[in-house]
Image 1 (tube, protein in one colour):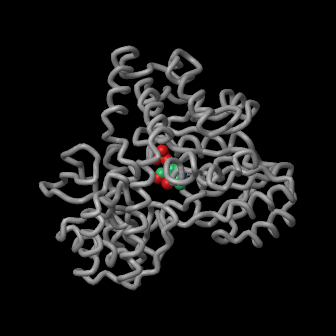
Image 2 (image 1 turned 120 degrees about the horizontal axis):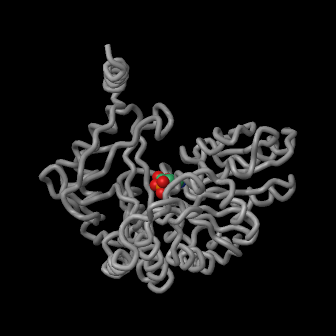
Image 3 (image 1 turned 90 degrees about the vertical axis):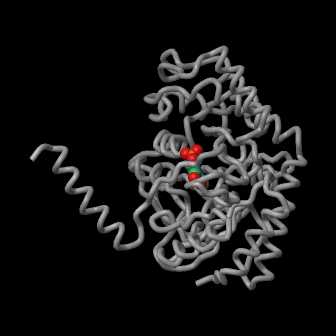
Length: 391
Ligand SMILES: Cc1ncc(COP(=O)(O)O)c(C=O)c1O
């Protein structure tokens, strides 16, 4: 048997096991641009599964910025930034993001996944300890594992448990990592208390603002912006791929950390640079977030309307972010609910383990500024008519 056939047999076995547990995933290409209404599999559906919270993925200004940069720089960058992939567009975006984030410095990464798996191992190693919320995103989990530091997972949002762990764990360096808006639950970390715990124990703090950037805060820069904690947090990771509608990520931090990442963060050193046109597009998206607060206002109008509607259906819902989970239990139950909502014109994907803990498969609704009131009401009416209830 060739090596290929051996691997194929392994894959067949694993695919069957995944299918039996309702955990196999399938791709489904869109036949339309990203937006509040999409065409998929020949159907036209209202899209409640995109992280494009401000509708910037289809923005004419963001698109025009990308096209102009393609003319100037071409499509690919040809090498990592440390070789010949660096352009003026990368530096401009880092400067623009530093101003947006009120940070001394910003370092770009190719994705949020690359940022989290690169930053943590760049700062801590085998003599150190990382303290991680139990519901942190997989990229933070993987960053902790790659660092070879001792990993202390504290119960979700439990600052008392975190404080105990910080006090009881001997380590050369201590780093606390947490999502600010939890990606699959939409709730918000108790950040003031976490900052105080870090301060009391000489720990550094890294936050992941992936679902908060563009959504929370007076400037739209995230939970640190909302709470005025920018200068209290050592590293603030934000993505360019969600509310900013593009691709890539960044960390807002000190000059020293930003400099260290250039030499030490493996996804920065060993990966081809983000294309310049994505940097130009992201810069236009940041301008839109700061320059057009009405975008955020439209998003929040939809968030409040959806939360009110869910409560009317007897579902506990806090309007705290653009993410609303409807926890249903076993994978088949979430898949079945997604199928029935789809028949009513609503696209909302079932989220299953390992993305969420066992027994908490769910529908995850994402609201966008680009949804109309009619779209929001359609989702609520579809939930009512199919009788979807929390498990
Ligand atoms: C909290 C969080 N962090 C990081 C990421 C990874 O970001 P990206 O999609 O840019 O790799 C995600 C993406 O889903 C996320 O939800």
